[in-house]
Image (cartoon, rainbow, N blue to C red; front, side, top):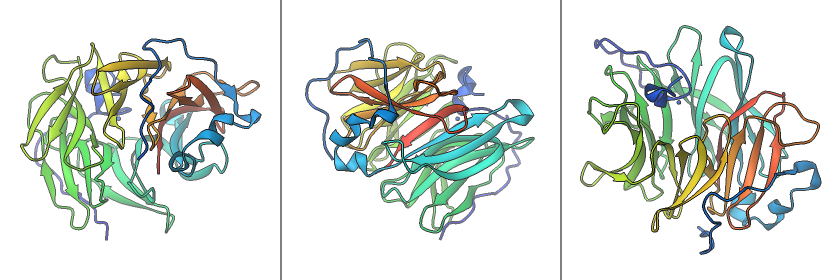
Amino acid sequence: MLKIFGEKSSVNLRTITGISAITAFSLLTGCQTLPSTMPKANHATKTPMDTSAGNPLTARMPVIDRQGRIAYVEEQGAGAAKISTLYSIRPDGSDRQLIDQLNGYIYAPAWSADGQMLVYSKQVARQSPKIYIYDRNSNTQNLIVNAEGSNLSASFSPDGQKLLYSSTVGGNADIYEMRLSDGHTKQLTTLASTEVQPSYASDGQSFVYTSDKVRAGRPSIYRYHFATGKATLIPTAGYAASPQLSLNGQYLAYLNGRKAAVMTLATRQVVNLAETGLDEPARLSPSAQYAVYPTKLSQVSGQSGSSLVIHSLAGNSSYAISSKTGGVVRSPIWSR
């Protein structure tokens, strides 16, 4: 049974608002393997095809990708008039389903390993972000983390029994792990710097996250190992944030400066997929043969608003899925 973690802190809190705790760096405003030959880094990405053409890429997808769903957020309006809608959709652009909608912000959805639960943060006017879990089986949303401060970027453990998330409940942005059965919570990072955007590895033995502990406002990506309680740097060039490991553990999707990028961890080879115009990362499909990312402008002829782009990492080809309402598309995540 899911329970709410909502104890209030007596510590003076530093409220963080916006997309994710990465705004503390100036943004804080929230298996099958890849073929051995990856595209050359910094290649010119082909123009995505219109989804109405039938998505030829989808037919070639591994079943684990094709049968999954992509959750994403669509935004309309600004300020007090902001409307955020959380959808899920099939990778071919069909069967778009509304999960949640509110006058405010929805941040950073993330699927459970079985694809039956979706965790995300919601923020309404004059309140800090809170974490909810949507259950596909019961079609219900449950408030899970109601602590004071900003609660963002939640990630399910591989067995679905725990959550990682970042929170400013202690006055600083740190990473916490919560047991869903009883709400027991452990603080994992205690530095004076900003530690945010945690994401479990598929074996549950580590997680990746973003920190500016070396230089304030200049984030890097680290890997925290549960066995030792220590973190190691994943070397990147310059600004790096919003990490996600592939299910096979071989690849890292992240925000490389202002570009959605994928790194091969063994060789450190980086493929920059696109500058999205939204400072959003790519997210890998379950097979790690495809990536999805949002773009600021529509990639579909005759459609307004932004788009989701599905990109084949092996073939350097893409297709686009238009927004439903002509709004700005953000935070796509691909389930099994």
